[in-house]
Image (cartoon, rainbow, N blue to C red; front, side):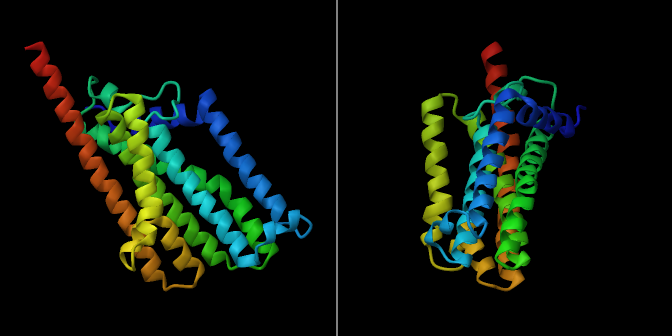
Length: 244
């Protein structure tokens, strides 16, 4: 049986090594570099924000970017040459479980990569204004967890909706619901939004509370993997019926 890590390696090779993937990384790191320059004492007046609000703004943008990019590449909204979607893998020799676990691994790996390459900029900006490193670390954990879930569900969406325009509409609707809609809910339901979890982390909420949000995102990723496996089975059944 083909192993799920082969799926993950193929995804990550395409996302990090293709021309589209390199462009995404360049823009992402360029944005972080620009933010770091603004963090300098002489850097643009920090947009008129105080220290805490300025770094909260930067970390919020990071979480939104990681969540969006993770789901966009997985759903093929941002096409990475060489990456195989769920529909393609359904016609391969990989088992449904291997496809699902592979997408889970690649989602986690890509989200962790995006968070990791931004961490030096985040810690530098935090250090310039004596902002607690603990908040930056929690923001990284929140971003990685939310990005993992977004990547898995993005892969499912890419395998579920073939038409590009409809898939894009559903993708952006889901992002707005999670990032903004959930943010407006009362606690603890607002923890479904990584931006609400970030506010709690920066506000000094207990680690258990913030950690609960990260656990929720990882559970959502696991649920998404189960849906990916089910979608692969469904596609294979449709293919079998069509040949019959």
